[in-house]
Length: 188
Image 1 (cartoon, rainbow, N blue to C red):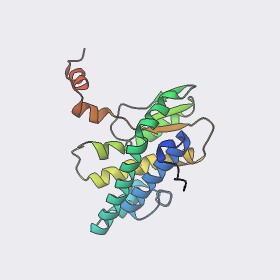
Image 2: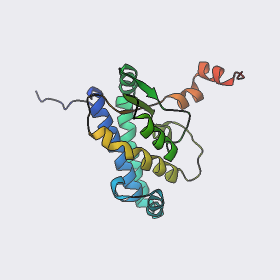
Image 3: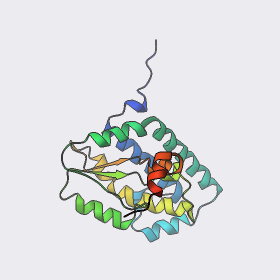
């Protein structure tokens, strides 16, 4: 009897984060043609993105498909892991886009908390109709900023300084009756 390789569902939280950021890097490289570590600014990234064509689109779609498969196998376990961290943890939020201000906030909060839980900024690109202009550009911008946190993930520290988890907020807003009822209530 041959042994099967371990499924992604059995990944430790650290391994899942490393795999997730590996998928992010794959998509970023497909979009820009370069690793995130080689791109110094958002402007340079946008310039590289200008070379988007059908071959690039196929590579991006393949990478997004791999990420979608990863999410299907691991999103629930990652969400549970995010809820189980000890110490002082904070959940960053309030924005639907991970850009320069979210990155700066993450860096500042890292000075006083053990773990920052970051709702996955890429997950909505797969599960929601975001109705964005230039979705490839928006995705590349999100990836450019979130990938700057990759060294914290790759360090595999005993206490994760950041942990990106899938937020089910947008799918729930679209499909869950209870969430829709709460969202439609007038605020005080």
